[in-house]
Image 1 (spheres, helix red, strand yellow):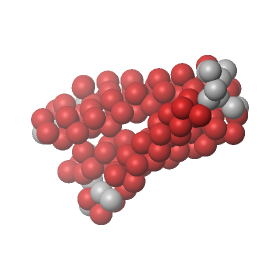
Image 2 (image 1 turned 180 degrees about the vertical axis):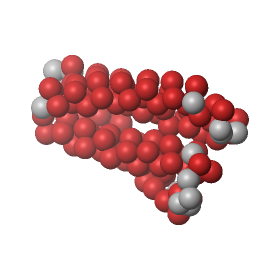
Image 3 (image 1 turned 90 degrees about the vertical axis):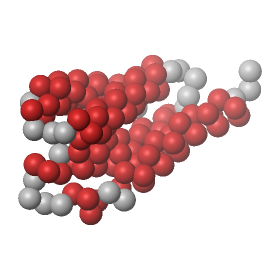
Length: 128
């Protein structure tokens, strides 16, 4: 389980850096300041959760069942939250209107909140 979590953390971190560089260099020329700031929000939250998964995968005080639930929620949360933000921020570059998927962003945010909440509950329940 830890190998899967750490690999996902590495993938999220790596792609966050690639997307951040892409936004700072290539998209800077074609997006408005607001669109670019929105794109950067997606990158920032993706990186936060790469680090979150790194912590999760290296932590020996969390059982695998809990880790699996947190991993699943985090993967889906990042895909829905950051993924939809990337698409919405670059909407003006596409012929498809990605605003129709705007409802996915708060669902992704909720999944990320649940992942952190489960981690918090795990530690609150844990006996010293």
